[in-house]
Image (tube, rainbow, N blue to C red; front, side, top):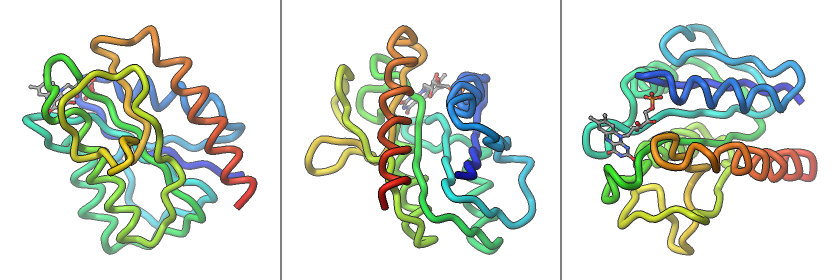
Amino acid sequence: MKVCIVYGSTTGSTEGVAKRIAANFAGAEIFPASELRGPISCDLLILGASTWGLGDLQDDMVGFIQKYSQVPIAANFGAVFGLGSQTGFPDSFVDGIENMAKFLEKRNIPNIGEWVADGLDFSSSRAQLPDGRLMGLALDEDNQADKTDKRISQWIAHLKKLAGAL
Ligand SMILES: Cc1cc2nc3c(=O)[nH]c(=O)nc-3n(C[C@H](O)[C@H](O)[C@H](O)COP(=O)(O)O)c2cc1C
């Protein structure tokens, strides 16, 4: 399975997580959102970015979404992860996940990365689904860095299962 990971990171936290996610897939390609230009072709496209301002998707990923409304993408499946701070920004926690999930939807790429919000404590997120799950994997490197490894490995096992089964 060819996996492409595209990330937007302002202070390096999402970049670090993107590399840790990439290490779980043999031969995964990983790109900073600001540097991609040409068509994308992969089995699974993973988008990851942080949230800034009050619920704003990270700038490089905003640019990627604008650019790739025109540039061709061939991907069988998509998935999204987002970084945020649940204590600092409990009312806009990982809101940027929603922007990335909507982008996948617009490009007709099935999002197989919807995931539980277990162990997270926040008031509101645009990324939350009616059943309480989130449109992607939420990670909080500011407050719960110790939980990141386990969250990543559980999510990736789920992605591999779905991408293999569908
Ligand atoms: C000024 C500022 C605004 C932020 N706004 C939000 C926010 O609205 N929601 C959220 O979940 N996290 C917010 N965060 C937390 C960042 O998303 C978090 O620190 C993240 O790990 C940064 O990742 P990066 O280094 O990859 O950009 C904010 C952080 C700062 C410093």
